[in-house]
Length: 248
Image 1 (spheres, rainbow, N blue to C red):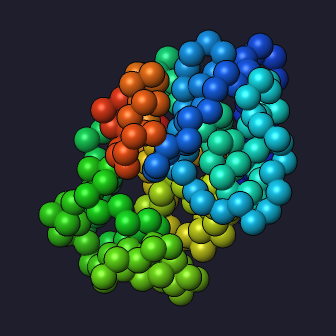
Image 2 (image 1 turned 90 degrees about the vertical axis):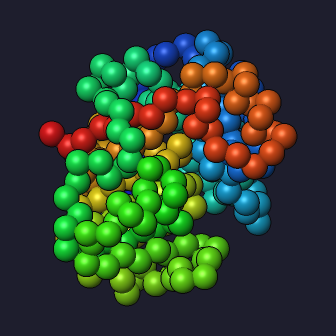
């Protein structure tokens, strides 16, 4: 499994002749949003880190596919912008519905948890409809996070814990900070679910990797969302629709 191809597959799945370009970028407290020329929007988790120069001086005015290449940047602020551009294309309601995307109240709805060992990359409990009650049937579960809360493992523990899990649930922001390829490699013997607003609803990812489910969000109220994410730390649930794509 060539997990380094993750970004190639994602970017190659974008069409090159859409005529769309980036009209605006919104830098919020928790989220970065990209607004395209036709008004559609996408988001990526705001990820701090500007130790490395930007690839582009700005993404505003650049064509969709060119701007999306910012996802590859090691300037993580810029990579957040690139993720938002990518999701402005993939995470639109008509696209998700045409692919058979459906609503789930939980990212794990319909997945058998009985007796399983589950690894969460990102503190996802109480997010994506995942609760401690839902996880009661599991054998064990671990939370691994870059900013661990009491009881969480630091994300460096992925190297030790993920190979022993048979279900791994990953925050979509792992694609922004570039840990996604290694997480997928460590989880190659597990069932994998990607969840959160940063997840791209790109079916080619399901075909190429052992990913069981993509659980993402489509922004349907971009103006209200843009105003709110600048003012405060918040979720984007109120401004989006949840869609789930399963491997067929």
